[in-house]
Every structure is written in C-alpha cells, then in structure tokens.
Length: 130
Figure 1 (tube, rainbow, N blue to C red):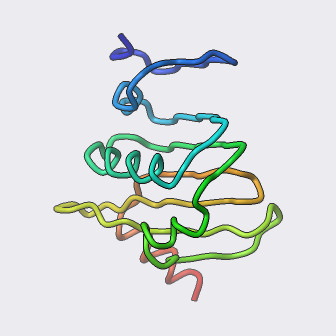
Figure 2 (figure 1 turned 180 degrees about the horizontal axis):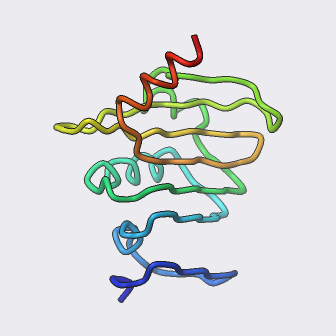
C-alpha cells in the first residue's frame, strides 16, 4: 500500500500498520501516547535490518523503563546538556556494515531520534570535538 509513497503526513489518525511499511521513507516522525523499553528494543532490532531509513523521531507522552534502557542498550556513548535539557546517545553496530544506528534520547523533550550514520562520520565528529 505505501510502497511508492515519498511523503505521508497524517494528523490525529490511528494507523494500524507494521513498522516495515514505513522503512522506505527518508524521514518519519511518530507521536505515541506511551512507549516502553520493550517497544523501543523491538523497533531497534527491526531497524538494524533496514539501513535505508534516514531519520526517525519518536515523540511520546510517557516512557516506561527509563532505567531499563541502560541495561538494554548498554552504557551511553555520549551525553550532554543543551538548551532543551540533557540527552543520551547510543551507537549500535550493524553487523557486516560500516554503519551504526545512532539512538538519541531527549527526556526533556520526550523524544527519541534514530538515524543511521557511518563510522567515519562518528570518528570525524569525535575528532572535531577534541
């Protein structure tokens, strides 16, 4: 159904679609009432198989499992303070690839951002920061 779409904007509608239906898009913004660590990890595991997604943003009203995410994703690779509050960032290696899945969590904005980045771009950012 969504195979050839390049842009889809939906207001306050509920879509009963599998996440794979949206993986062909370059950018996806999703707002949910509640997301759990289990939801997030299931989504991350599915994303690791589809490197073509450019950027995904999950906004939420409630996140269940704030402390558990550290147990599931491991130690934070990078964290900082910005104008919108603290954020945490994880880098997940994609097997047999030069790409990483970058997961950023902004608790103050109640949002997760996910995107694929190359190892080279991460090394370049680290070089510039030092």
